[in-house]
Length: 426
Image 1 (cartoon, rainbow, N blue to C red):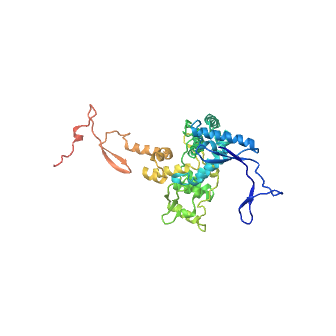
Image 2 (image 1 turned 30 degrees about the vertical axis):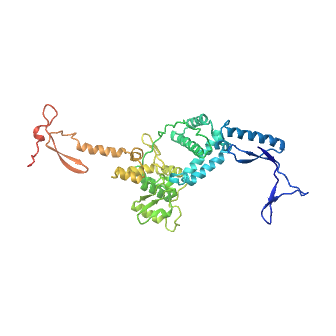
Image 3 (image 1 turned 60 degrees about the vertical axis):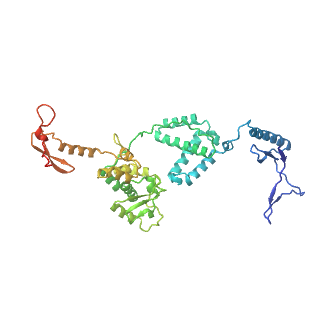
């Protein structure tokens, strides 16, 4: 069944381009350093494999391999799995293949990942590769206890549950992708629970006075970035990806391409007229594919400096912290405070669920709550209770005459006269 043979070195003929034998000084063929052998695999196909430098050792190897194939064909041994041959692949090679796939078609509806998503996947996988000592792909088998220990150590180092879940999801998604490609037999991270992602710190929104101070203190280019963030609610990654041609001069808005939005859907973000005019002025003379805004790679660090210069506290106990993403929360809160209903605000924020808009981003300011309490105080009869015949109420800014119902001395029902109405002629 098994056949052993020797092959010889060849090279390309410079004139014809065909492969010809390579000869030594005496005109003899030069053999390859290793013998080859041919077997019939368990599926009945001929396979040629490389053996040892000596014929005897190669013959023994050929007999062993042929015997294993015969046992598989007869059902004495399970057939090989595709994951068996990929287990020895370097982990770094498979990781790079995964990132290339994501950058091509790994996103929503077969689209590619955003730049930031790919960058974060790359950084997390490389860090886990180092912390877990992953050299080849098969090192992932039995990794669950060690991975849990590494995550606990990262938690003890101060990382939040949300960040730990990002690391968990990154490696879990990589393993699922490897299973779908036949590189792994199953996901070694099955049974890995999520961490509590309740945020350790909350964001607050800027007051109008703080916004004015920030815009007056910040450099002009960064001040324009803050204005666009406050006027549109766009995220830092979305702002960074905007081009000059995204400025829609006909509709006074910004065209949001699906490849730059978080939900991978196209959108149109309207702009306040004054902000639109400043943007048009700022892009005069620029190429259409030039960045719309000048944004540094460390935007949050630059904003911290601007907050200090403006005398705005970054953290306030009981209210939360300020960072660049807090501008999005400020945008949503101002929309609500200025009359936007839930559907309108949800649409402008491009949220799929109104609960995210109202419960996470929208904030109730203490000043606004105090104003509502004062308005209620004007309505309720805290002074001069029910002694006067009428009391003026203010509802939605309109004065309304209220009628005081007389109540019997006993019980809670109003007098019959108070319930009497004009009888219908019908």
